[in-house]
Length: 132
Image (tube, rainbow, N blue to C red; front, side, top):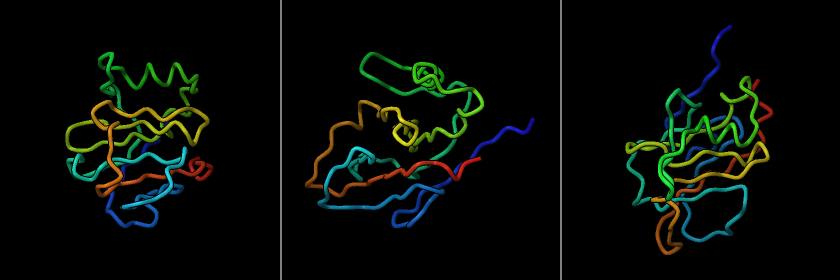
């Protein structure tokens, strides 16, 4: 079988970077559950949205947690795991978008604190029915 995957380098201001995803810079906006946000000055560009790779992990307060373990906890079928968006910058994975699939988003601890007084990068994810 052919391994399904995707990778997209994010250009700020893109209307749609992948079917169902939008990335924008905001100063003030309503924080919504289907969005994740980061202060722009914390991001080490380039920002990438991609499917997972073997050995991927997320840095959390309890230490490193593998993406595989997170997907196991979410009961994501192996055949669907390639669809779960991984967001990374130059330093590594900064978030796993579970919300479009009915799970909670997971964000690396060092990116969780943000200030609405600074430029924000917001990633909003619709439902991923476009991924086959």
